Image (cartoon, rainbow, N blue to C red; front, side, top):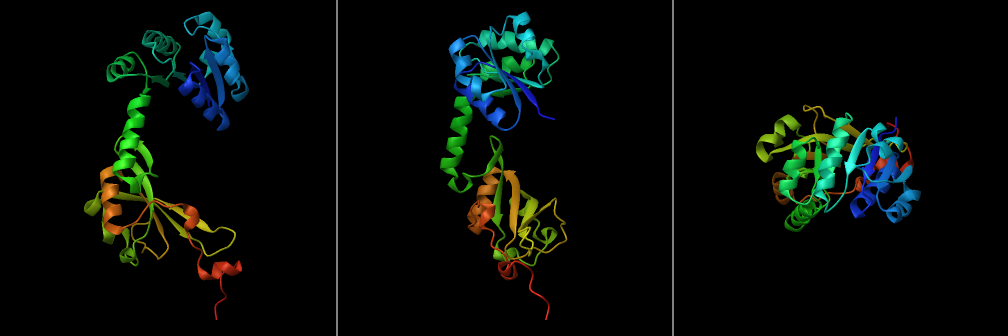
Amino acid sequence: MKRTFTIVGMGTFGGQTAKALYEAGAKVLAIDVDEREVERVAEFVTKAYCANVLDEDSIKAAGAFDADAAIIAVRRRFDVTVLATHLFKSHGFKEIIAVVDSTQESSAIESIGATHVVFPERDMAQRLARNLTMPDLAEQIPLGPDVGIIEVHCPASFEGNSLIELNLRKKFGVNVIAIKRSTGTFAERISIEVAPNPMEALRSGDVLVLLGKSEHLSEFVDEFGQKPMNPETIQPREEEKNGAPEAEK
């Protein structure tokens, strides 16, 4: 079932979020008090509605309270953010994302019901700083300010050893959460083993999916000279090149 979102505020952040969610298959109701902003995003969302978010009857008629989650993206108007968050909370919303401009606003809005906060300038600054200071991890999937997931080629020194033998969690503070490897068949080039068997030996060509703190991931990359890579760079085994496994002799 498609998730549904009510997004209040069609500025840069709200408009881009609305479009991205809609393109990802979600149902999106976009609300803004400025009719020009509503018209600007109308073709990129399920429904766009011009109204004051504090006009409860009006946005209720538009279906604002029928969504799975609300995103309050009213920048520079923290008073409206507070009242809107309270309004959606009173209608039973269990997921309310609020855009804020300071740590004080973040703390305050969470205290009245926001389940997540977005601090664009801070979040972007942290991401930029992380990418500049740890360029090898620039393509990691961030899970928080200092946690991420990266993919690395299996170091040659790991080949033939099991995850238990390597004990990467103790030595490097990282966890192998999945292994990607060539299947040896043309139809299904790459298999992904989630929560891999810790007793199975690693092979040449394996790609390790690592979870850990950014500093630990960076140390691992520095130690083994492995950079995050695209899964498409996994090379097929020799027998794959003919479209099928080589017959046994």
